[in-house]
Length: 337
Image (cartoon, rainbow, N blue to C red):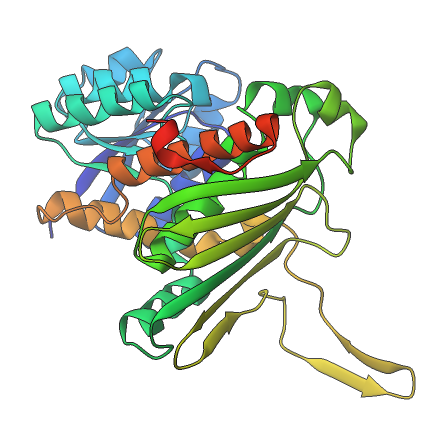
C-alpha cells in the first residue's frame, strides 16, 4: 500500500488534531516530521505520536526529500508565505484557512501551486461533516428541487480573547469564513452580494479591538438563491451549528450533534442533551475525512475537493462583509476584486 509522508508545520491545537487523525485513522499516510516556532514540548509530542523527525525550522522540513506533503497549521499570517515556499520545494500542500487575509496573497499561492504542479487543499473541514455533506448530497440528487433559500446558524460557546480578535482578521475572516464556504458549497454557486447588520453585544473588549461579535449576514448568489447566516461569539448552551436548505420541492435540516440522542420525558418536562461543546468534539469526524481526501488526492492524482479558488472566494465574501459593516450598505463581490 502506498503511503504519503507528511510534515506538519505548526504543532498547536489544529496541528495536534491532524497528528491524531493521521496517526490513528489514515493508514495511507504517516506523520514523518513536525516543526513549530515554539520548541517546548515538541519532542514529547513527537514521541506520543511516533513521529520520527523534529525539525528546527519549516525550511529544514521543506528541504527534506523524504517529505511528500506538508500541512500548514501555523499562525494565519504565515500561511501564504509557507505555502509558496512549499510549492517551490515540490511539496503538496494542505493549508488551514484562511490561506491569507488578502486576495492578492491567496492568488500568489495559487500561482505558485500551478507553476510547481503540486496539490493544494484548503482546510474547510465542514464540507466533510456527516450532516452537511448529506444535505449537499440531497441537493445534488434534486430532493429539495431548485434551491431558493439557505440558512446557516453558527455560534461559538464563548468568545475568544480580545487580543486574538485583533490579530485574526476579525470575525468574518476567522469564524464566518467557514460559513461563507458552506453557503457556496450548498448553493453550488458564488456569492454576488453581501449585506450585514453587526454589533458588539458579547464582549465590549472585542469592540474596542475593532471587531464585532454578533451578526446577521444576507447573501445573494449568482444562481438566484438567497442566504442568511447568523453568527454569535457566545452561545451559553454550547456550539450551535445548524443548516437549513429550502427549495421548490421541499426542505432539509441539519440539527446540532449531541453526546447522545436520548430524550427524557417526566413530570418535570422534556429534556435532551445540549450540543457538543466546541469544534474539537463537534468536527473530529470531518477533520479525519478531509485528511483522507487530501491523501487520496495526492496518492492517486485526483483533484482536491477544497481548492485555492474556494479559499479565494471565501476571502472575497468576508472582505465584502467587513465593508458592508463599515459602510452600512449592500456590497457586491465585484467591488472587492
